[in-house]
Length: 243
Image (cartoon, rainbow, N blue to C red):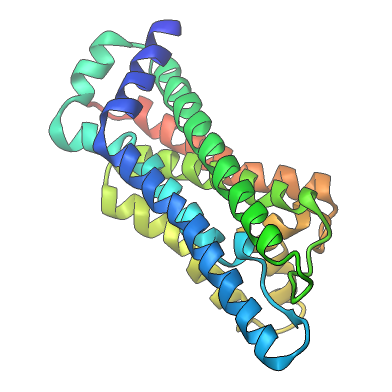
């Protein structure tokens, strides 16, 4: 297992996609700074405090989708280029291989999400410290859901990449989970719109911090299911199919 994990860490560090995805996610800090300065300027012109969306929440989809793409790209190029044969020759156990990839992807994306989201949170609160901007945040604990959602979507991307063997298919499916399903839920009749929304990633991310329909512990479990189910499906299909 140690050799498989070491190999996956080397791959994550060496492929350009990792640096590119992390770079895109880091743009959130810059966007958060610009957003806070803009809202503060609006508040100053109005002569009163302005309530606004917190930047670490407003720009969260950028971090989520960039890390999800990284998860997909952790496996699909190996199928496209045929390197998966060499990988399986070095690590014959497919379960061990999937676990090693999941640990590597989860570690990189969890670290990236934590740094980017906390930095965006800090920049926004420091610049808004003059009282002109109210970000309607209950405290630092509200970033727990966003950080967890970033790693979950990356692992979901890895699982979908394993299942589809297609970069485009994996990315489109993750994008559908993140952006399309909430729109579909909004058009459903009551109470099904609220019931479906409560178990979608966007609402679960808020619920982890205590701002949602589900209690935090249930939201964490439901959010983790978005990673576990695609990984289990991808592993199952990988074992059934030839390389």
